[in-house]
Amino acid sequence: MHPIFNQNNRKLISLIALILQTTSIVLVLRYSRTRKAEPYISSTAIVASEFLKGLICIILVWFETDCSLNRLIKKLHDEIYGKPHETLKLTIPSGLYAIQNNLLFIALSYLNAATYQVTYQLKILTTALCCVFMLGKKIEKHQWISLCMLALGVAFVTWPSSDEGNKRLSTQTPKSWLQQFIGLGAVLMATLTSGFAGVYFEKILKTGPTSVWVRNIQLAIFGTIFGLVIVYIFDYKAVMEKGFFQGYSTVVWIVIFLQAIGGLIIAAVIKYADNIIKGFATSLSIILSSAVSYFILNDFIPSLFFFIGAMLVITATFLYGWERKVKLIPLNDQKR
Ligand code: C5P
Image (cartoon, rainbow, N blue to C red; front, side, top):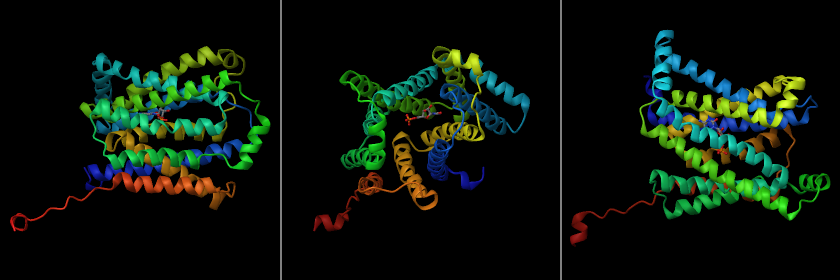
């Protein structure tokens, strides 16, 4: 293997890829919202990106088997069909991610955007708690402080500006306390599934010899199945009327592609770094995409909240990696 792909470099490359992917998907979504187009069904887009993710992973496994079709088929047969117990383990994270996507949808319809964004950042802390309880990871006191700063910082960064807030308030009907309660319950549940599913997947990736791409194929198989069930339950009528791919423009395909690539990058980050570091990378990319929006697209004006949040995120990132240097006193000096 080329020395550039050693463990440390893989970690760095996967993190940079995650920051670029998260930044670009935010920008493409922002751009797609400004265009007038026929709406597409989001549940079908989730299925399409899971399916595409599976296909890309098959190509990657083909490279792993020296581009031999026979060896690829044998590997997939042995690893997926031949080890049903191992394959079935992936129903847990993929089922949880399917539930999570729907919980977030409920949360967004019952809560205002600010409450939703701020509450969802608690996933940084649920992920850390799952790492401690499920992986036995040690998190130092300064790192807990840094994680709280990170969650608070992202909450500030994503807080809508007063202009956006006023626009939202004027178009939104007031939510009853029951709707707010359901919305808050849904987003809190999503923070739990996010932490648990991510760390469960990390445990599977780090405790067995199976390649990360094979694991992702297993995840994509169940993701596609669960996704189709969700399309059937919620959007059967619309699909029957206007088709599965209605409203799929080039931009929608780009979003689907970026989403699929994102799944692969997240898996690589979880494998070569961990779920907590993933939280830092995605938080930093929110700031990066806002900077691109401000300097290049000119469609975003940062508020004071944004600057305070960005400072908190950047400080938290340095604080998390900070290591207290233990002062070693030479033995001779100690005797003196
Ligand atoms: O918000 P959170 O970080 O939990 O979101 C993780 C997202 O990454 C989910 O939407 C999940 O479908 C996706 N994912 C993926 N492939 C993986 C791991 C996560 O597509 N191997």
